[in-house]
Amino acid sequence: MGNLTSSYVFKALESYHYDLEETMEALNYALSYDHKNTMALTLMGRVFTEKLYNYTEGILYFKEVLAIKVNAFEVYEHYINVLLWNEDYNDVESFIDFALTVKGSDKAMLYSKKAVLFEQLKEYKKSLLFIKTAKEYSYNNDHLSLLNEQKDRVKGKMPKKKKKNKVAKKRAEKQIN
Image (cartoon, helix red, strand yellow):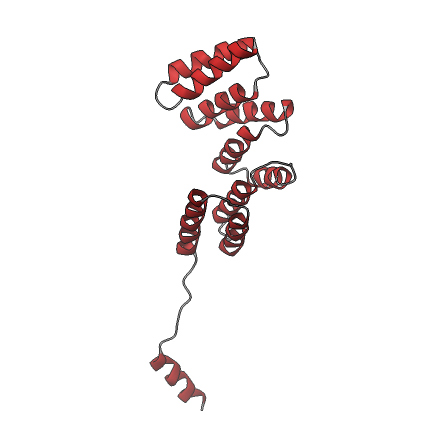
């Protein structure tokens, strides 16, 4: 039955971006054969969060995946995304901190998501620190490019420091003297 379940999961993954009806049909078949298949449950959660915008239902699927297998890495990024979209900031920070302790987890992605968390909280300096840390754990050029774009975006949101022009500065000095 494992091969049959996998073939339905592959079919669902293949059709996810262009045929939601086919995706749901394949996922329902996969889950009928193996109701604990973490890939199928993760994709079902993605359907609810990314296509139907039903964050509550999607979160339930993602939590189910984590209850079945804590190192089901396929769920981490999607679970973090929905927590960020749903503005569950305490939950997302706790989950990222936990995920960083799991052997084999994608540390670069996790630190990058932590940077997004602090960007959303408007704590831009912290966000930049986590982008820097993410770069240390990134081992491919595509991800480094994304981190550089993220860094530029965060820097663009930082409040600009007001610079006194030289004339105003000299007037202020003359008034003091």
